[in-house]
Image (cartoon, rainbow, N blue to C red; front, side, top):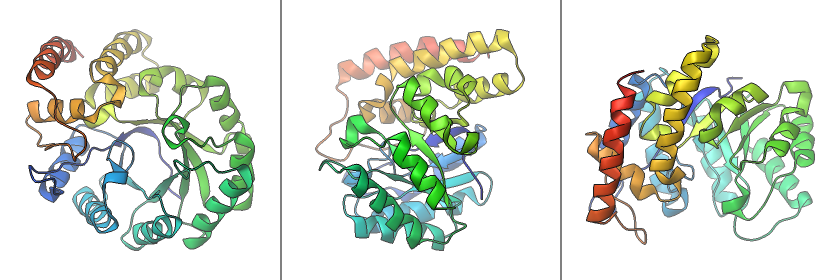
Length: 300
């Protein structure tokens, strides 16, 4: 089973002025990222505004990304939804259309206990083939539910197709607990892209990076430098990558991502209400900061 690794991009979802999904822009963004040398695409997650999309839209986006990727990179689809039946429907659809695997966020908003989490992921894992890989996805600051390493290990031992986790909270101790599952065979991908080098040295397989949806270059360069054990370049590149994370507000407001992509000539479109576009003043400040960072990118 194909696992995630390296620079896996959490993709934004482009909308047009009327709030409709722009599939042409989805395809163009996919190719832009692939051409920049990323290792995998991960659409329809938090960065993709998943809960603002209906099931039909999510299926169309999934199909567009896979068709454009055409096997050039690994593609995992995020299929977690507010309703369990929709999660299962999207997971089965992902397998049917040829995705390399899926990521599934914990149930959100309503609190669930460990037994309920285990049953939830069991139902998802059993709804697809035994050889179709599933990543758990824990982002407790957004979902309001935290997935313990103990429950993750139970699921890993119970289901051969549960192969790893995307963990998007900067808790190093818990990250280490995940890394101990399955004697290191359990794949841990992290969402804290600002700490990419630290996470790689801990043993994470890579990052699922939202910032890379806008500026993949520093993260691709950092991963290559890490693989080549180029310490001098690592020190230089990780500082630049961290600055991009800070400038783009670490993904806390996706309007920054879309404004920056649009400025790069990549049509990322608009936000879907209730979220709004950046103000003129916010854009002016963002663009001034990006001018400085892009000059540094040219030196890589």
